[in-house]
Image (cartoon, rainbow, N blue to C red; front, side):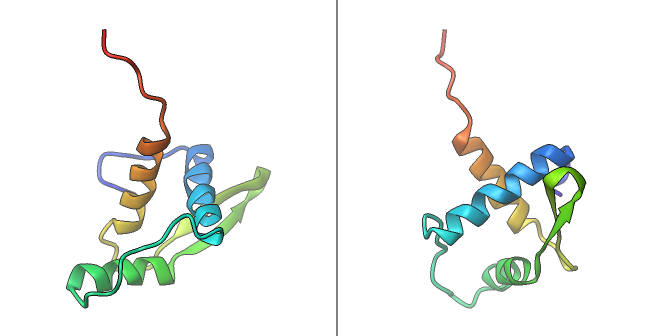
Length: 89
């Protein structure tokens, strides 16, 4: 979870399912490893995240500590990118 934002179970499931599909079809790729602390933290979250099946066909995600929010940040950026754009008045 990112501070100040809590997803409903249905929204969390949709947020998780879309990047899994994108990664599986190679539409989602990450930059090359640079060895920075941020990159290592991001890789920790990506490699240790567990997707859990919930009742009703929903998905949930667990990431063991330490969690810096990289994975949730990527999910929320993806959500924003997929949102319809409203025209300015």
